[in-house]
Length: 134
Length: 134
DNA sequence: TTACCGTCTGTAGTCGCTACAGACTCAAGA
DNA sequence: TCTTGAGTCTGTAGCGACTACAGACGGTAA
Image (cartoon, rainbow over all chains, first blue to last red; front, side, top):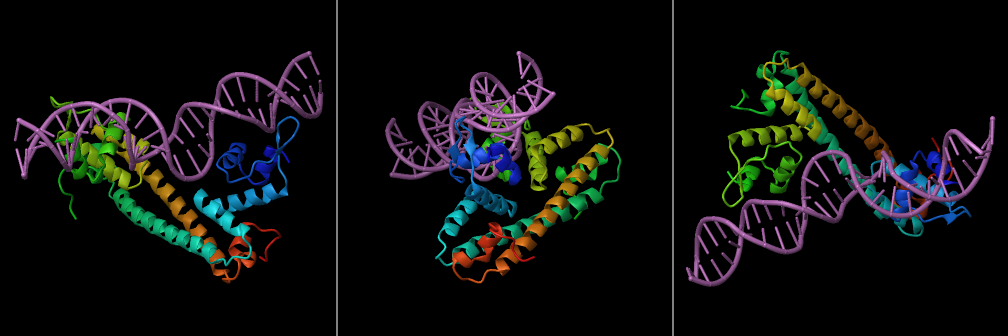
């Protein structure tokens, strides 16, 4: 299959496929006589793996590790589990951060009395001239 | 005050302060005879504003808008409120995405039977050879 | 044949910094 | 006085994960 077909089969942009090849995540495929990339089902499987892992928020570096690990079928999957767990912890941290942020931003917005900028509580919160009431 | 003082007063790195100047977010300050940047309280206030807005997750472009708006004190603060609300929506979207991701990743990890990679459910989920049971 | 895709390579841009390299200025201690 | 060491200067390159071109070539249908 050609790069465009592979790309649409995996919901990836053509440029991204070439990028993955460039950084060594996807092996260089054979070429047609016209120098077009010719992919097989192994490429499709590998790219699907990459995209799925990316969708789950793994970094490309983590994806690279997962790919290496998945190549050694006899090995214990502890390392795989470890990577996933680290990633889960990271996601929990991000959710926590964003939730705190949300609360704060909500408070800031809630204080808006829709007057002029001079009396805008949002601006005031961002740039406290004097200490705001606690 | 010198750049290092300004930086530590706002919990910013020196390089970041210079970066903000370069992209026009912070006006170029006066210079000492030794060509050191010499900041005043206006710079401190403006950088504090920037940092606070950044802490709340606004992009630099949004910060730029907020700064422009906050300069016109007579104007209605509707635009300010609007930017904040758009940002809040964005945060809600991110939290939703991450939560869905968390559920999915948790499911994937929960399926790990700690065997070999060949039978690893995590890898299997990422690279479904055949359709997995629903 | 002409139009219009798709593909090729290579490079530069995105965001928000961060990390150098190599030169300077300044203040304090021996 | 000399010498450290820390701070500052400019400029450039790097990060992650793409994305967007430019300019050339290939393939196909009307």
